[in-house]
Image (tube, rainbow, N blue to C red; front, side, top):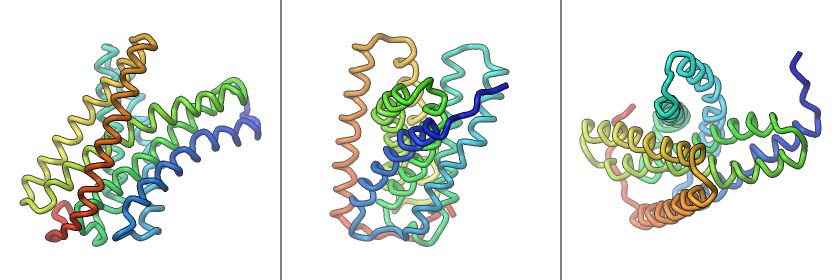
Length: 235
């Protein structure tokens, strides 16, 4: 019989899983202070990201049972997660009339990604052996998987922002290219974490942080330019 999770472990799993994601979300929403998105839509998008862990789990289980190559499994898992996060962002905010400027694509995709990361972190941490390992694991997940999910989805959002004023075909190509490129990034990160030593992992983390800094600068550029666009065409 599976061991029941104690209230203490459940509490620390929530702290380690949810709080870091909420702090990240707070940071990104502060960057969008010029034309903030409706709070209700942000909450809905975050919840969609959380709930997307369910179909992701079953899809990845199916892949595990049918694909034998470990690297290919990681690649397909990454693709599934990027597609699910995009779907969560689309259902939550991208399909609404409030998606009306380039920067919104990044906001909704990051929000969905952080919801997904929160659920993933919670499930990961709740399996820890004790409170201390739960907190330590939560710290590692905060600087690792959460950062990766944010960066991968934000990259898709950045391409959508660049293509915001373009025709429908170009926008769709931007989405597809973004998902595929993010899948490669996601897979590469997972392969390094699993197969390489601490030194190489440190290099990967540094690369992720540098990418986040670049993303913040790009985000600021979009915010300052304050470009308005034609109606969204992926609706």
